[in-house]
Image (tube, rainbow, N blue to C red; front, side, top):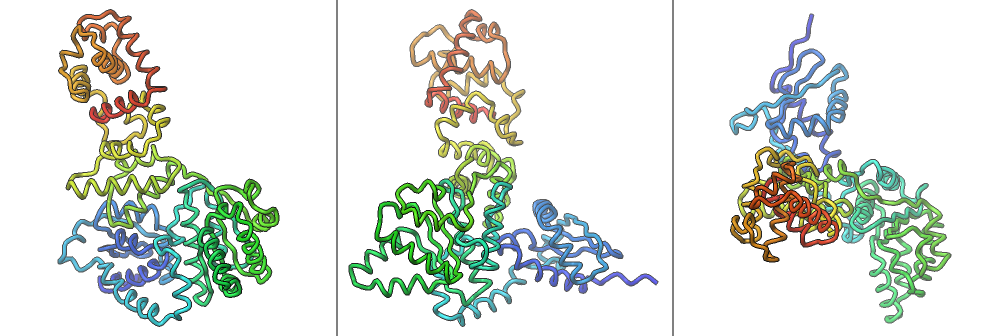
Length: 487
């Protein structure tokens, strides 16, 4: 005899149990954004169907959390073999009681967490104060090139003072080194609340040394750092040429290492390239694990942007994010800065985010080389965003109008016989755009400009082609006009 299908109340309680298992593994803002008003719609034998109120939530959860949800369900009922997903707009109705209000669901847990924090030992709170809680380790988006460093940090968080000691992380500016340090420190405190975790920049360490020498408190300074269970030091390259600080730092990390205490370090270069540091110190840096943080690939940059939007409780389509991820390649801080500017303009001006708006904002972060490099490529071909206006909607008249508006002149000035210097370059840009965007012949382009010879149009296109390789101003103007045209 087949067992009766679970009732709605039973399904709701089951989904609460699943959410209880999922919540510790997912960031709070992500959890609220993607699981709010979700529910188990129905259960048929070993197949459970989970409902979400929007397509965005449906797609995100299905792609990112499918395995976690299935595992959580199977922990509760091993007979469950498969889960399906469905968008049910009715869940957004305030009167629909099927979905779980995630904020209400979390309220009890948060209240208990606050009480635990109030009762924590004061020493532990002091240790954690310098760690930035905005950088949890599970929030670091590790692409294929940075999985090793992320895995090493996770291993340290679970076993500080173990195999990866010291862990030396190096890489360029804005790639996430500091995020990894803070996240690892926070994770250690989460797993081992009694640990004494100290985070300090090299500048702060040097200032402590100078202050201790001046105030004759070197002994108390040594006790402060050598009582650490985990010492985290950011930007050790700045110890260069500071001999007293280098000596004290060497003895500090040597003492910690011999006591099996964890050491985490970051720098902009590998140990061997720190020319101004004592060889003993460089040797100590290199004896553990040395790993480089590399620039993220396009897919990882998109994931970082999506992750940030989820943290803010915003739903932004991929084609709006693509220009930011495409153009800002080597600095995550600038990547998120461009996103913040986009969000600010959208909210301040009460407008819809578009790919064109993203491109305008990204221009503020362009390097000149990048703008020059991409000036000759139609925008939609650069990032394949769906918001771009297709090139077939363009016409010669529309290009002439856009160029004349940009340079604040009359369209007839561009198409006429005037040879003034301030008109020649805009006219050549018109011809160039007609060539690359409309694929018109040189003869046809010349006809549209007072029946000029095809060689005039050819010269104009060659001139602009060469200018955008070296002339930042022409490249910038060309990009701005393309954006106005929606290409």
